Length: 161
Ligand SMILES: CC(C)(COP(=O)(O)OP(=O)(O)OC[C@H]1O[C@@H](n2cnc3c(N)ncnc32)[C@H](O)[C@@H]1OP(=O)(O)O)[C@@H](O)C(=O)NCCC(=O)NCCS
Image (cartoon, rainbow, N blue to C red; front, side):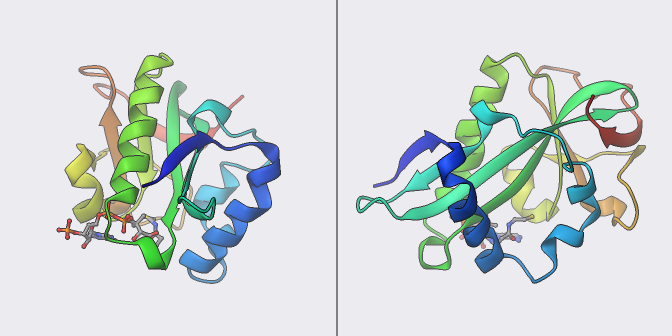
């Protein structure tokens, strides 16, 4: 029903419009966006989901970050068009991109989000990992793409490179 393809530069503003529709106004003021400023997303992990007519139904993006000096992926934003929410598309985008991330050699993923949703993909609260304020620490979640990849990884989350 949906086709997943890597996002291209031509898709950028269509994805931005979807995020504007799905998130509260002012989303780019969130501290997680400061980690994305002037940093290129991880292109091969940014996926678009289109329906049979080619309309954008969902999108996920990733950025590289550093956590206490260790490389990690920052998952997000991820959003599904309101007309397609609850059909499993969010899960499809997340699972497909996590598989790609593992195949690409990444070890760990983090995000800021709702634990009740992301727990189903294996995300757990990250203790000792500090997002730029203001961020609710209970919403800082991590997932190990390789066993033990988050063990001993603590510190401030900073922009990559
Ligand atoms: C969050 C979002 C990406 C999920 O996509 P989706 O395609 O609707 O999700 P799925 O169909 O894969 O999963 C639906 C399930 O997730 C649950 N769910 C969705 N959002 C949730 C949330 N914020 N907290 C807890 N559960 C949530 C639904 O209740 C449903 O539960 P069920 O399987 O028990 O019925 C989508 O709802 C969305 O775009 N929301 C607005 C933007 C947003 O909040 N993005 C995430 C930022 S943290």
